[in-house]
Length: 426
Image (cartoon, rainbow, N blue to C red; front, side):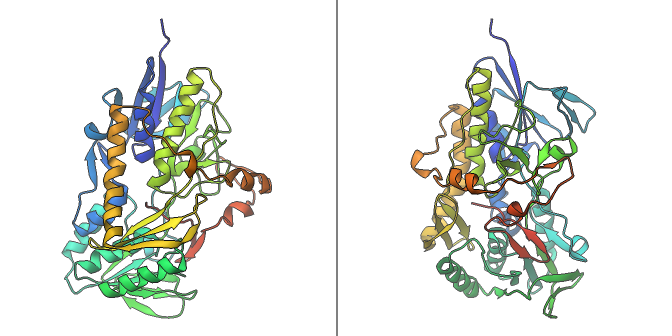
């Protein structure tokens, strides 16, 4: 008789659903997915939810395997020694293996007035609220979008295409991930849409009021609706539960995605920091990370050694309204190439990516194990960068020594008074 193994996945986003579906390929493994919402959120469509062109949700009945038990609840604490999860509803769930895939959300802004008067867009609930605010505002009301990563650019373009008067405050530079060629294309398209782009080192936001945004250079922008897209953070569940986390709060793992504290816990998606050299927070990384996390669990169940992940990037896809977009090609190590695709074809590619991401979840639910990362896509420089990196102390359960390497990772930008990583999508 085959002994049953209970695997619990925390988080029902791109990484969590991929992992849960993939785990069902082995008999004798019972899979439970815990998520606070009853529906799957297409996070890369949240700007469309704000603009009214998509509802940004799918039914779990569509994307989740019938063999996965869905529990709609929130995990408050991980009892690591007892292998038990304490839920917000005062229930508990035990596990043999845990997949930590909580994803990310928006940070609490430290800029005075931002928490009170600016509207974030990092979660479904925040995007829904923002849509109501935008719909209630007069069509001529000025809108200020703070943050010039993909979320900020896409939100600004989406609203400008609807005829809104939009100003995009970059903090430093428009689209910090983009190659200068791709950046110039995006700037031209935003100008065509009527978006006023403000960038430069003195354009950090210093305060937000009910009807204005103040910048470091002394300017004051009139704003009826201020949208905050500057940065992403992760839940502090791992730190509160005594697990080792990096300076952002991501669970530190080895290259197989196994926690450095407990080999019964693996991590995936935005909340994972493999070898403290985390990947860009994106659905592009989330799917493969979720698949590898599941493979690591399955190999351990089969008493086989876990294998290191092999992940690389193709680029970043940004929509610029419904009719145009840009695809910035990248090296596998996620640095931009000097080549981009812009225009209607890029907009269609972005839509294909959004559709294809959900389609891959559906396929994995029906035929677990089908998601494969091509060997040619793997970043072959990762091991070299890991070997060349100076050893740094770990951040454990809320305390930390200085970690200069992590703070200085490529792509970290200072926007609106806080230091953030490259935010989000595609």
